[in-house]
Image 1: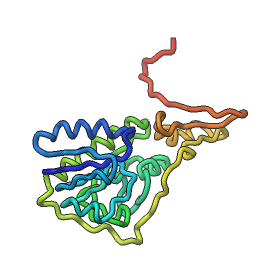
Image 2 (image 1 turned 90 degrees about the horizontal axis):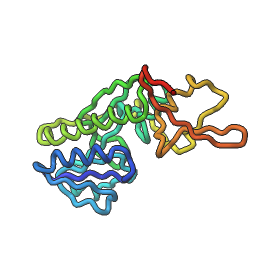
Image 3 (image 1 turned 90 degrees about the vertical axis):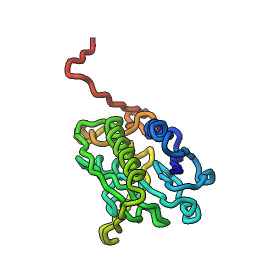
Length: 219
């Protein structure tokens, strides 16, 4: 099959997983990784992975199926960074949905869902690893079941919730709150792209978090 992946952010940590998936599957499929919708070549499947562009009907018409990977139990959690919002609100699991792209964002028919347990101690890179590996599994599912899948409509619009785009300011900590109260926010912050930070005594400070082994010492 002829497959395109549109990932608009070359710095996104999912790119390494996508490159590995391409290498594994390139012997059996013609696969291109694209950064801009203007460069979409057309084909059988278009995967939209960490894509910030709206892909309209005329772009999707170049493909037999255009599929989105979205980390929420749709129609709940339509919008931006759903797993980050969920974890900062105390969620201990995340649902990953494989769905058809439509003009109305995150409204398409569902091909498959997966539920991922998120341990309360998992840090951003561990959460990413679980999420991105699940995305790869769903991409494999799409290839393997392309001719046999029976997509399902989403639940009624009454179950819909929408999430706004996160900004760097959403990584701001409150120095008057305890570490435990803010731990879920700290652990989801990407230290390179959206680091946790706080302001105190006239200065701004970046906070990074690293998990140590039980036998670690500081000598």
